Image 1 (cartoon, one colour):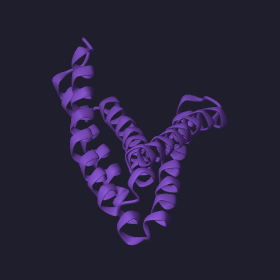
Image 2 (cartoon, one colour):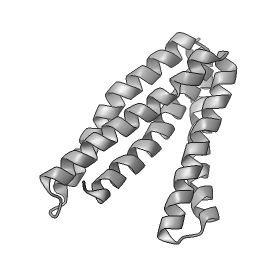
Image 3 (cartoon, rainbow, N blue to C red):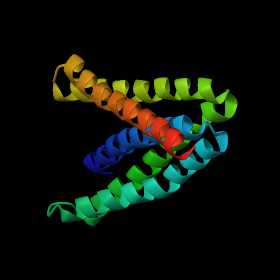
Image 4 (cartoon, helix red, strand yellow):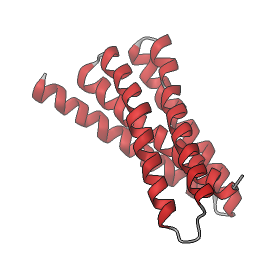
Amino acid sequence: MNRAAISTGLNFGLTSGVITTLGLIVGLHAGTNSMQAVVGGILTIAIADSMSDALGIHISKESEVSASKNEVWIATLVTFLTKMGMSLSFLVPILLLDLNKAITVSVAWGLTVIAALSYYLSRKSGESSLSVVGEHLTIAVAVIFATHYVGDWVAIRFG
């Protein structure tokens, strides 16, 4: 198997799975406080956004002159499966805990995944772990705050 294609799918799928799903569930929770909306959102992300991201990676890899068909399809499949699995992992706390606690656990889970992946990548590339982890966590936290406040605004405006 092609390690570069697998790495592309894993890194993109994990990152997108965390950021997209966290943004969605935090925003939906703030806007609706509805378990039904949050679960429906996670399932929708797991299917539609996983397929969308996989197609995006597929087309991106096809645009690389040096990428073989095998590399294109490996990156596509790994992206899809990783994004779907990561997104679906957020269902565990949502289904097992009170919604407010589940959102807190989900945020902690997502930030842990981002921190661990960032640490691994920084070590692999020889960059400063603190700066890479800090940069990636800052972006993730910005998404969480932004989607929370958008959810609040939706609740006020349309609730």
